[in-house]
Image (cartoon, rainbow, N blue to C red; front, side, top):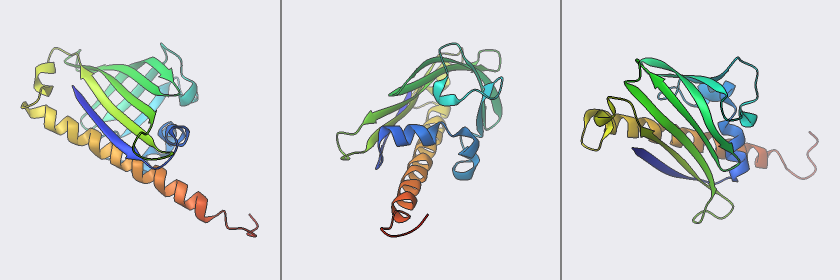
Length: 162
């Protein structure tokens, strides 16, 4: 199991909005998650219901996933690749921060369930790799959200005509 918590200086709603803008993902993150898309395409990600299908690309693999939970505070899917060898419940949380006033504690993790799950236990080869990938994505999302927030704030100069 891997779990990363990242403080983001923006509201949970703003973080969730940027998170679900999957088309823009390559603009700010290219390492761990290559893409996420709905199957069939066209469904707005933020309104996906339990049972909706996704496809996600990661280094070296693509997986099919099924949404199991989608609320304003959490998004979860169960995905599998390589005939169930790598299967897991991947989750993202958008909690009001107790440390950053008006901010978000973004939670990113996975419960590994595949028949090779032992490789993801602390001390095993893939645990450190997976943890690093999740931390990188979380930091990239943080930078993106905070950059967009700053850009929005900078453009709200009194008297400036938009």
